[in-house]
Amino acid sequence: MATGASGRRRAPGRGGGLRSLTRVAARGGGVAGGRGVDGRIRLLRFVFVVFLVLVGGKAVALASSSENLTRIALQQQTASVVLPAHRGSILDRNANELAVGKPAQTVFATPYLLDEPKAAARALCEALKITKKPQQRALEQALARPKSGFAYVARKVDPALAKAALALDLPGVGAYAEEERSYPMKGSAAQVLGCVGVDGNGLAGVELEYDKQLAGVVGSEVVVRDPAGHALRTVSEKQPTSGASVRLTLDEDIQYTAEDVLVHTVRNSLATAATAIVMDPRSGEILAMVSVPLVKDNAFGRKPSSDRNRCVTDVYEPGSIFKLVTISGALADGTVNTHQRFSLAPTITVSDRTIHEAEARGTVNYNVEDILVNSSNIGAVTIGIKMGQAALLKWVKAYGFGRPTGIAFPGESAGIVPAADQWSGSTIANLPMGQGIAVTPLQITAAFAAVANNGVYEQPHLLSQVGTTLYREPPGRRIIPARIAAKVRDMLAAAVDHGTGVKAQIPGYVVAGKTGTAQKPLPGGGGYSKTDYVASFIGMVPADHPRLVVMVAVDSPHTSIFGGDIAAPAVQKIMRFALQQLEIAP
Image (tube, rainbow, N blue to C red; front, side, top):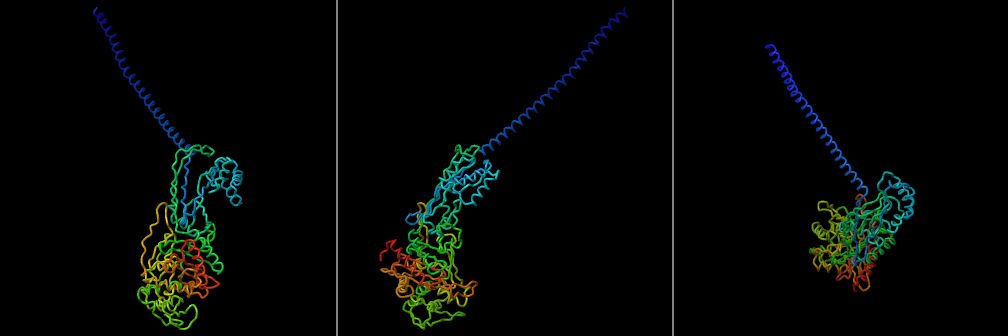
């Protein structure tokens, strides 16, 4: 029993042990399985997150690419077009147009859109009336570049021609508005007005000096085009601001007449060039400024030597005209007086130089007026020596030589005045009669204008008005006393009445003036030519109260070398017309 009981007791014990073991095993298996499930979940979660990151990144990349593609597409479909500003006109003193902007069109093409570039070039040449073979070949070559996105077909053509070109409906061919500069006077005052470049910017003369005021401010517009390059609509637009008009002091009719007179003077005297200036001495206004040879139709570049305004850019030794400075300065200083007389031999030797008169004569007894009336070299040198270096240089500076006049014109020359430490032994003899010094035609005209204006120097100027702003004339500066200026004018009137300038006389008017016959320096400083001269004359009228000062200088005349023969008649003709034009009574 005991054994049985004992066995029975063990049997349950063994069974319970098995169940316990089973429970333990069950508990152990549950832990391991839970861990496996969690790991798989975490792995799936990680894979899902990575997938989302990849999908998100791809979406962002596609969105960015789409934006780039959209931007590229827009760039191909839209274009920013410059809207040119209307360039202001240049007017004469009476508001006559000297330079104006004329509407024009520039035709362009997109070569890579053209299937048959040769045929397109031929059609465009026919529509635009391009007849010159070199231009036709150049256009054909420009359109035959399959990778090119832009080519000019024709710049600044008549709008009607541009319309005919667009009517061909060639893909990629378009046009935009520009302005063409037009000069109604066909070359008159060309060297003063200057010119503009193909893009409308000033390159010379007044066009360059006042380019900013004339040009205005360009505008712009953004347009949408179809694949063929045709404009569909305007997205945005900024209107241009027109340039201001510039009114000059020039008188169109006086300018044209002075040019005509000067052209005939050069032709008849077999000269190489000439200049002329007409000035109002009371204000410094330039009524005419002429350089011959002229520039025909404002076509600069054909003869570069003709393009410059010689009146302000070129210098020359003035010769006897400069005696005005010597004598007026000596009178103002009290070095001489009008009644003082001098015994003048036929020659005078100073240092290494012997000076002669223009025409041989014996010994004479001249007063100061006689010296000026007869344009005596010996007399001028005698007075210059009496003045001395310091006084001569003082008056040279007082009259404005050796520095620009300030006319506000591109390329103005200052002239050449030898400094005191650069004088040679003969300079004291050369300078009083206008040698060894170089001046511009404008400088010497302004000096005479000061004497005409009772001794007051007025700023020479071409500008009268910009837009609505009037030119403000700076105050004049006195050079010599009014009484000295009046005495000098009387002497100059005598020079025209019975001296070297008789060919400048005008019936009904008293003309005052001075002749100049200047030897041209030899190249390399080897003295002076005995055959090559500049013949000049400056006159003022009416002599008692001048309203006009007229200068003419003729370079290398061959029929005569004397200013009284070559330049004085030209001054007389210009003066006669200007007196009538301005209605100045006798």
